[in-house]
Image (cartoon, rainbow, N blue to C red; front, top):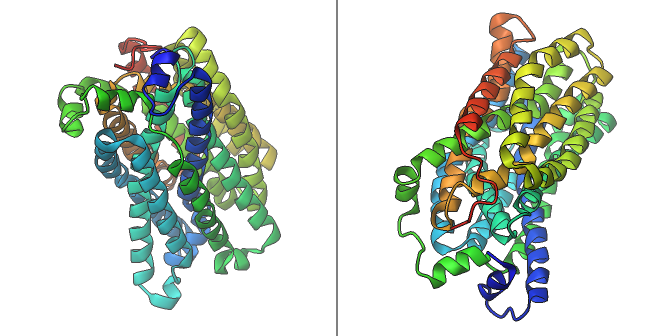
Length: 440
């Protein structure tokens, strides 16, 4: 949509300058809200060891960690449900209303997680309440990711969708930096007993305190020009879920296939690996999380660069660098880390993965949004991505831990990453590059 038409699609916008001001505020509010949402969601995995000790006590620490990672994965089971319910709401009522809803739900679930008494205090109710909170978090994030992606891309002019869409993943990177730094600092200044007793609760309370900022900013932005245009032209879908799964089922499958490698790479190298390094390779927990924070910086810096690059050369070439790179390098990276079990070895391993992940994250929102028209974009995009995250990403830490336990090989998680890389590579080779396709 040309800028003049975009401005006309917004009420009370008289000039292009007004629209530019609204665009900047919309991008900032969406990115900050997404940061709050993903910080709240990611910290569960980063504090899995302490959560395991509080809610799943037992004689075998590996079994306890598996239980915590399984609970972490349970949150992802609800992501497709959130994608369907909140996505359909966002396609019928607007992106803004849906994104306000997701931040509020996440804030409540995160605060409750930090306040649940341990198993020693209330017995079986402790893990039950933990799972309920995790399910709510997953439901919220299922709508948040696709909504933020659609919101940003619909505000971007043709030729800049990759760059502006990358702000969603940029804010995810910032959330990862904040989460890993929080974990690193707490593990450095508190001893193991204090971390288990109360230190792990701090980031959950912090996530709740940040939520009002996201709510305030999102409540003050305008709806996207693309959705306003759909309302004006009476093209809003009456049943976006039905249309997404029938008329647009092949693009939904493409969104699923494209999304697999990045989500497995992220949750294996960024969420599983610090716990793996600390519990099985003997790397101090604080050092492991500092290494992860450095890798998160690499990811965050490269994400908008890759988004911009995809505007210049197309989405497929940039995404293929990530998919093929993970396929070729995952096994050597695990082999290197196991052979060099130091904080430096971990940092190098994670930074190489972060570079590959940046090439995936940068174009991702744009390529997924460009697969669908406005009337089903929120729902269809959310379903395709959330199914990939649920099946492959959310349980990646559990699968990695399980593979090591069953095979006895600390290199076995690399095979799961390679499988994901093959799926995404084949998908990318089969689809037509949608770069700068009309949004409607």
